[in-house]
Image (cartoon, rainbow, N blue to C red):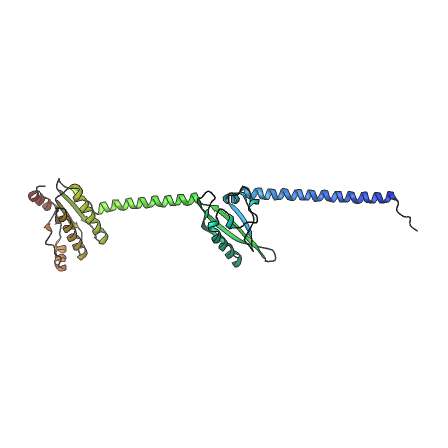
Length: 300
């Protein structure tokens, strides 16, 4: 027959159980501290990254976590301040429907959407531009848990690109202005005479330039004679003839006489064949003859 445990035995057993409990509690506390340090390090790594990172649940698209740069873009100081909230209460509420539609597309298609630009309103009233990528969060057993998103603030890059494009447009426009001046130069030959030597093909756009340059020059220089030299124009069609006639009529309204020089035999035959009425235009064979005529008859 075994002896009943004494009080000392019971005390010893309880002390042993208590010691084991304390040992396990210490292990749990150590494990908890290790996990907390790991989570803090994990959050520190996320917060240090310049790229914005966030993740939402699949059902309500509420924020489950993010890094500090993302929280600051949303007008918050820490990532914990966003947890449980959706886009409608964020600084970018104006784009909430746009963002959530993209989230749903990623979740329903189970397919990432990468590197697309979108606007983002900020708490300070400004609008930034971001380069966004979103990926579905899928568990090991294939269940969609949510959506993971990242974006990079490209506002400055986009602004610099727009400035470069604007500068390029200004350069192109300046070059076009220079080309227009070269293609339709108006040269003062004397106090009352200007000459416009034309070279190449004359289309509708250039014909408008010719008239604009001619009339502006006549008004600015107060010239009484304009010599249009077409020795460098190889083809004259109805369009060119009409442009010359309109320029002549417009110049007369300013009190100036238009003279046409440099007509080749081929162009003369073309004009006759077209039946263009050139009666209102003085014609000379060469620019030299035209200048001599202007000096003699218009006191240039």
